[in-house]
Length: 301
Length: 207
Image 1 (cartoon, rainbow over the protein chains, first blue to last red):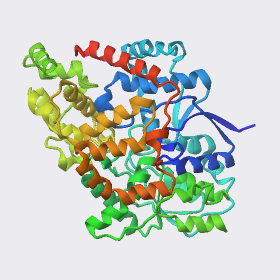
Image 2 (image 1 turned 180 degrees about the vertical axis):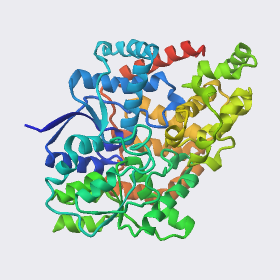
Image 3 (image 1 turned 90 degrees about the horizontal axis):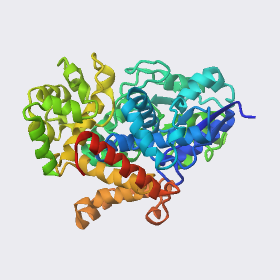
Image 4 (image 1 turned 120 degrees about the vertical axis):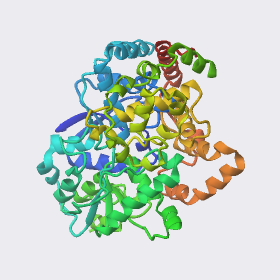
């Protein structure tokens, strides 16, 4: 029997052949080693992400998230909802907060969900959490360390927390300006954390990397530069959008700014999976466009 | 859409603050701003705003309706939430900016060619269609939004990124045909239509 069980909201980017499919692969491997059981919310839908507001407005956006919460309460009663994607976590949690604070919005949402026979189930008492919260708060750093068989010795990680796995809700009561959980996680599995990484919580542009590429790539350039400044071997992040933005535009940034960036951008779950003895494939390392060679080497040992 | 705008102008006359409070998401917070400027200084895209949030709040109170609703400023919000966590008065600034952008868009007076406004529309239609993001369709729609030749050009510029994503199995080149969303997209369409109707009714916007 699994030690911990959660209602899981994987989100669009984690689907097979989607932009964070390798994140999902590593989360599955990591959770297996930690004896965490994830029960996927059946038929979940997109959270609306951070760009959904402009066309979607208020109520339609909250209905998207409320539908997921209702489906979770109906199918996985009593289980906390856990998301691996920053936007999914934020979207669902924001809706839950807003429905709690505004009776009118809650009544309207219920009226809409009734059309799908979901109204009576929306109690909205379910905690909505990020996977890193599960690791830190429920498993604990000691627990994270327990399954470790291969410490990530000699690798220097720039822990790029980014925005939405930090703001506005915060993780484990840590500071918004300098959260330490990612560094602590790195050190827990034997890696070297760059604790004075200057761009730890700087925005990569998010969805605007698509619509305002030049402005966003300037942000990304600074995020990568600061990692190199501290001698990082690779960047590690908890966010699918951060991962993609910081990894895939390096060639374009090099062309535009004359830089020579070529730094891997990994997920915390990839680090843990490798430290737990998982293969490169189980850690989804074959999904990194810029290969994290030194992690692959440890995985192959 | 401009009829809706005219109706709102007539309804609120010179009281733009009241219009914002009654129609913009979290708009009732605007009068709480004490003009310290921390939000403007904290914004990653700050230099690209014609009017940073602090100024927007003052302009709303000064009744500068057209200037606020037609500016590109709010469309520079990356949703990083820096302003929210730093605001000493705890205004939900990010949400107010989103709300203003959405309101201007609904009134039909938001800047037509703003790329984020256009991308946001493509994104919402993408997710509303099947319930889940179709990343291939989203990228293609974005590249080709200015026509075929421009799309080819942008597509070529992004070719190496796309190939990298396909090679690492992080982009499905066949997603236009094989993408799957929720089991019953029609039911989702009903929910979203109903939600829009209620929202429009509450805000006095006839759709």
